[in-house]
Image (cartoon, rainbow, N blue to C red; front, side):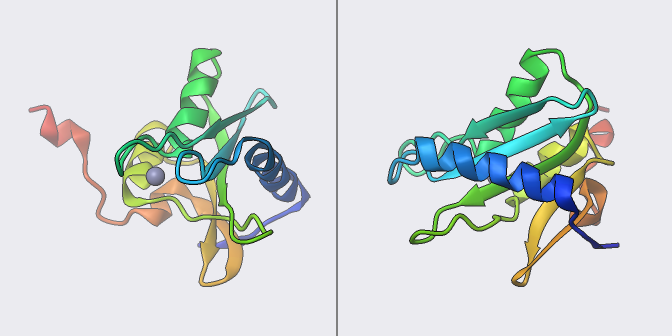
Amino acid sequence: MFKKINSNDKELIEVARDVLQKRYRPVRHTVAAAVLCDSGRIYTGINIEACGYGPCAEPIAIGSAFTNGDWNIRTIVAVCKKDDRYPVLSPCGNCRQLIFDYAPDAMVIFDNNGKIMKTEARNLLPGHYNSEFGNT
Ligand SMILES: [Zn+2]
């Protein structure tokens, strides 16, 4: 279910790291995400912290892809900053639901107890909320 990352995944991680190195601001912007779409284009985003809440980096990056008409997400990753390193950050529960809703087959690169792996979004949210039932 969990797979090893490949060179393309490592490149996507580097894109996210480059963004965070440029845009990092303590408290305000501490996470960056990169999204690879089926078109081959990559979109990025940073989190926007405000009063202890605010959008994560993943929805910002996904929103950027959608804004540009790129609807098919192939792979997504987020990174944070820890001292001088930019480790991969696993998506929070809200983002897991978001990624699942829009791209259940997209690969999510995540930290599996210190090992960087990837898996389809559906595998990161067993027993997920089904919005179809919520709309009845
Ligand atoms: Zn999140």
